[in-house]
Length: 56
Image (cartoon, rainbow, N blue to C red; front, side, top):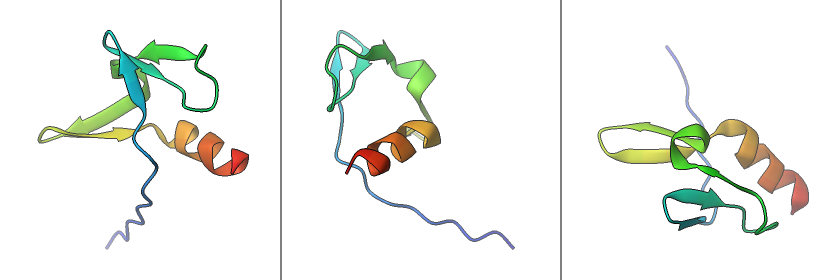
């Protein structure tokens, strides 16, 4: 059995289909590279979630 832990991270902006970091607006990337999901629900890549947590 797997246990999943989820934490909410404030929604990030997207600019013309590119994810934009809330902390550093000059850092952008295609949404497909920084998010994953199924059933229409997208999640931020774990590495970016961790970087957000470290900075807070």
